Length: 162
Image (cartoon, rainbow, N blue to C red):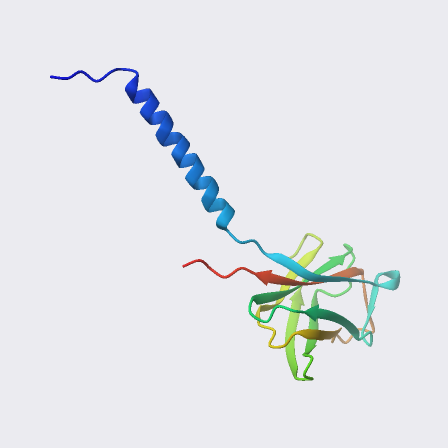
């Protein structure tokens, strides 16, 4: 009968442990991360968002293959005068096609600023070029007080690995 050397088992476990660490490290490197491809900030004078303030931002889009998200972060003060803000978004593509999106921002559950909302969870841009995003708030108030600024982002979302 052969005897197994006592120092063989710790060396074997050490090699298995190192292999496991390397495998986990390589799998983390393959994960794709979200990439912000465009970002704009809109700062409101006197922290008031006027009902007739139609905001238009232009973004250059070159990626027509990937899925994107349109995200808005609203920075607001504790004395926000409206707890529900209906929004109308219009996306105008380089070929002049138009799509509309309606959202309602509900601040009644939110306690922290900025409030983040995904306006479009799965937007595929069909054409390369300049896109316009137009939006406005549609409350009955002339001014919504307490809105400091809006950050509008277009994020490239990685495809799920199969």
